[in-house]
Image 1: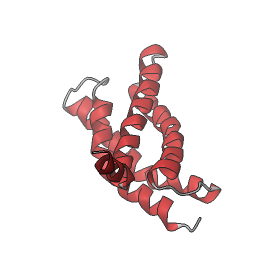
Image 2 (image 1 turned 135 degrees about the horizontal axis):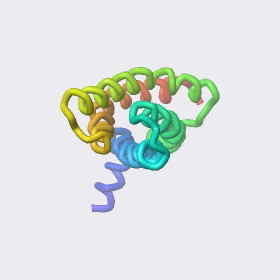
Image 3 (image 1 turned 90 degrees about the vertical axis):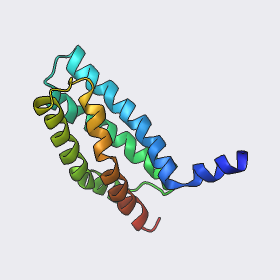
Image 4 (image 1 turned 180 degrees about the horizontal axis):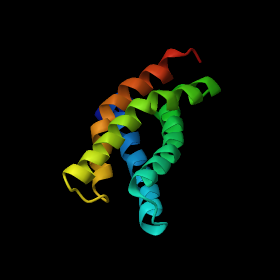
Length: 132
């Protein structure tokens, strides 16, 4: 059983999902702080929480998921590739909240889930292509 778990943890996809769960939780705490405590509009809170959690995601994915060394180049490329992620998650958040009338405390979690496949492909390309 230990050997099987060791193989699963070596799999980048599994590690990415683990980082994704942690990062989503991290994002969500910031989102709730901005929207519920500081009473910032939910879309502004989403963007602020997204930017903060993206930095954490960069380091977790660099060191843990893909086992590469961070660099300034990767650091500055990583957010550029997140343009797709922020577009998908913001669009989904808006549709879920405004059109589908899903509570704005639940909608960001669903929107994040919709964006995960896009983020995996793009972050892997950025973090794994440069020689360390």
